[in-house]
Amino acid sequence: MRFVVYGAGAIGGVVGGRLFEHGHDVTLIARGEHLRVIQSVGLRVDSPGGSITLEIPAAASPREVQWHGDEAVLLCVKGQDTVGALDDLRLAAPPSVAIFCLQNGVANEREALRRFAHVHGVTVMAPTGHLEPGAVQAWSDPIAGMFDVGRYPSGVDGADEAFAQACEESRLQSIPRPDIMRWKHAKLLMNLGNAVQALFEGQDGADEVARAARAEGREVFAAAGIDHASAEEDRERRGDVLQIGAIDGLERGGGSTWQSLARGQGTVETDLLNGEITLLGRLHGVATPINERLQRWMAAANAGGAAPGSADLAAFLAEG
Ligand SMILES: CC(C)(CO)C(=O)C(=O)O
Image 1 (tube, protein in one colour):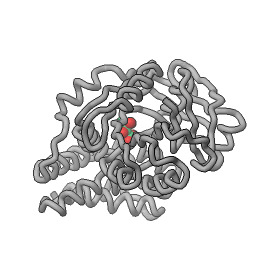
Image 2 (image 1 turned 45 degrees about the vertical axis):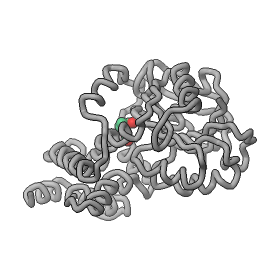
Image 3 (image 1 turned 90 degrees about the horizontal axis):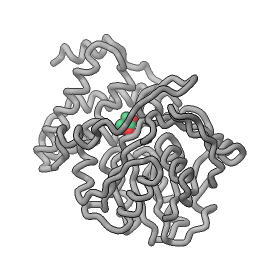
Image 4 (image 1 turned 180 degrees about the vertical axis):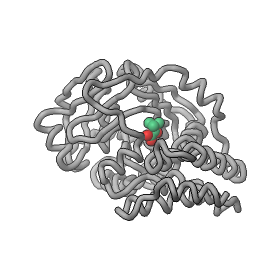
């Protein structure tokens, strides 16, 4: 399988790096200083087991890639960048390529299917990091993450089997699943806590707000008739595969939304995560005040305005 990884940040860098390290044909599409460092020095992948620098092919745009038509494009950008990435890909990638969405949320696959015929969903359970150009971190070893895969909206085909096998050969875990969106909806419930972590990590009431955001999510899924893997299935799947360790000289920060804020990226994924619950709530007549409030708080913090603090959190909880 030939892989083109669009978005070589935390997830794309670790997945592309591990696949390349284990002998697969990989090209990264990256930008700016990150691309410059990868092209001049290589991509450094740090993990508790050590660091490796990989001279991995990298390009600034799909127009620089030599396409054959049978590539697996691993879409690893944040949800807010999906449409731009797909439009960019469509200008150069043949329509026969398979798009694998290694992304949080449940809206990316639909956007991909508007533009490409072969679309696959992938659940991303991988504690990874990317805060400095040219380097990414895989915080768990020896398995860097779990990437269950399936055809969108349902089914499993040969491309799913080939993707899962390449992962298994590369210290990444993947199980082909005919009901992949059931698992991606369960993962979305987990990611409703991303905004809470980014805004209120460690503050009193933060856990309560994350729990309440997830309860709204479950209520909305029930009203919308959306099936999702249960907490037990999720726990059983994860088991103790991901062994999180320490990396010499590096602090482990937060999840993906925390990292987007820390990088001062200017946009975060919250409207595709908590906003999915708000959207479904509005469509199906379920109130979602907590997810809505998280979206508004995050929009303000992201625009460089006054970030909400513990007093806002306490006042919000007191409102009931
Ligand atoms: C599970 C985790 C923390 C890493 O894959 C995640 O989904 C995120 O940071 O968005």
